[in-house]
Image (cartoon, rainbow, N blue to C red):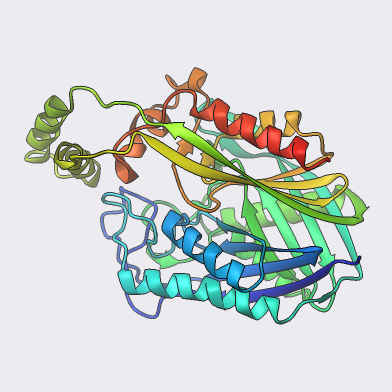
Amino acid sequence: MGLEMAFSKVDITPNRPLELSGFVGRRNKTLLGIRDRIYCRTLMLRQGMTIALVSCDVLGIPGEVSERVNEYAKRLGIDNVVITATHTHYAPAVIQMRMAGSVDKDYLNLFESRIKEGLENAINELSNTTDVEISVGKVNDLCINRVLKRLITNDVIMIRFNGKVKTAVINFNCHPITLGPYYQYVSSDYVSYIYKYFSDRNVETLFLNGAAGDVNPRVNGEDGITMIGERIIKALNEGETASITPQLKARTRAVTLRMKKERLILLKYLYYESLSRIVRTPWVLAMRDWARDLIKSSEIPRERVISIVGIRIGKDTVLVACPCELSSTLGEVVKMKSPFKYTLIAGYANGYIGYVIEPALAGKAHYEVGESYRFHDLLPLSEDSAYKIVNAMAELLNELTQ
C-alpha cells in the first residue's frame, strides 16, 4: 500500500495589536508590526491509518486546544494528530504565563479554528507520493547549552515527501530567540529563513523544534537569523541522504507525573509582596502573583497526565513527540535508547508542561528547574518526571519496531 500525503498552510498572523508571548522581561509586550507572517502548517499522511503533523508558529500549544482538536480530528477520520509549536517568542500569547503576555480569547479561538481548518483542507487533498527521502547533517558551534555553558553540535534532520506538493519536515533543536528579548514584531525568528529558502524552491516546509529546553543560539539579530538558516541548509546539503520506504504506524502512551509540594509559601508571598513595592519588575510581579495564586487555590492537582506520541515513518525512521521543553542532554539519551537509525524528537507537542531537565543538573538549571514553572503553573514537577518521560519515549519507540 502506497503512502498518500497532503500539505496545508493556514495564516494565523494577528490583524490587530496583541501581546506577544515568550519573554517576562519584555516590558512592552504589545506587537508593533509584522516582520514575517506566521502559520499553522499541516502534513497529512495516510497508509492504512491517517496521521496529521501540525506545526504552529507560537510559543506553545494549550493542552485543552490539543484535546479538542484531537476529538475533532477523529470525526474527520484522522487516527492521530501531533500539534507542535515552533516555540517562537514573537507570536501572540496562546498559553498563559504570568507577566509574559496575556492570552486574547478571540485570538485563541481563531488559533484553534485555524488548526481545524488546516486538517480539513489537508484530508481533502490527499494524493500519492512518488518517493520519500531523509537527509541528516550536523551544525557545529552555532548553539550553546545554556545550563552547561558550552557550545554544542546540533543534528538537523529533513524528511522530504515528493508528491503533488513537495514537502520537507525539518527537525532542529534551538530556541527561536535570535531577535532578542525586547523585539516587538511578529516573527517565526530563524525558522523564517528556512521557510523562505524552501518556498523559493517550490517546497513547503513544516518545522519541528526538538529537545531545545537548554539550547540557545549564540548569534543574534537579523545577521544571526541568516547565519543559522544558512548553516542548517549547508549541513543538510553536505550530510547523508537515504531513501525511505514508508511504513506508517503510530502509538500513544499516557504518562502520569507527580507534582511536588511547595514549602513556606506564606513566607514567599510576604517576601515577594514586600519586594514588589520597591522593585516593580515583571519578574518580581510574576513571583508575587504566583505565590498569591497558590495561597488562594483550595484544590491543587498533585498529578498531571501527559501523552507521548510515536510515529514510525519507515523501517529506520521514527518521530517521537512530547509536551515539554526537553533538555538536549535528555534528547541525546532518547536517541541512544532508540532502536531506529533516524530518530526525530518533537518537543512542545500536544500541550505544554514546561522544562524537563535531568535532576542531576538542577543546581545549574536554576531557572529551568527552580523558577520557570512559577510563570505558568503553581507546583513543580517531581524529580522523577524526567526519567518517566524518557523511559516512556524509549518504550514507545521499541513498540514501534514490532
